[in-house]
Length: 260
Image (cartoon, rainbow, N blue to C red):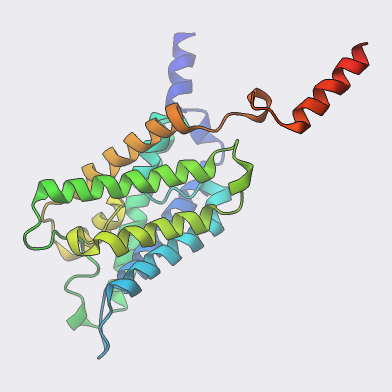
């Protein structure tokens, strides 16, 4: 019994049942994120790319990814989201570890493809996220913490199975949240929001300055948001709703009549 309980918590059986589709989806999602997102940070012509263009590109590519692979893997495409799902029991330990692994590999692959298709003179940064001069590592950690927090809070909100009014809006809501984060604090930390996204650029450029900020910040923020949503904000199932509505009264009246 104890052995089966451990296997259940680890998710041993789950990872043997066609998980390759979900892993492929997470890999491809991060590949596309780093390719398109980081491409928006590179200028190879005369026109300079501003923060609005970068912010919208990251938001739009996430929207496209969630729309296309959400039904396959849940479209985490971010270790912070996966860790939030893990601490709330929405994903097993082994599956979470595999998700994070392929997310990182996908990000490296995406930046690698981008580097291969970018002129040599423009390959120095490839969308790397670094702290702006004057921003301390602690401040950067705080910025990334709140970026991870708001992202995971929105993800949990739009994915709540008991909220029918948000069905179909998840890709737009999540994409706009990503864009909002970039618009707000792109000048502080580069607005990573995603450890895997930053890792991909760091490996291809060799720039590791304050790299821990981009892992601990979003992940701890995501875990905090996930726990708060689950224990304080989760929508009440319809059958447990106690608020007065005419529909409930009619149903109750019919039940009384049928028993009379």
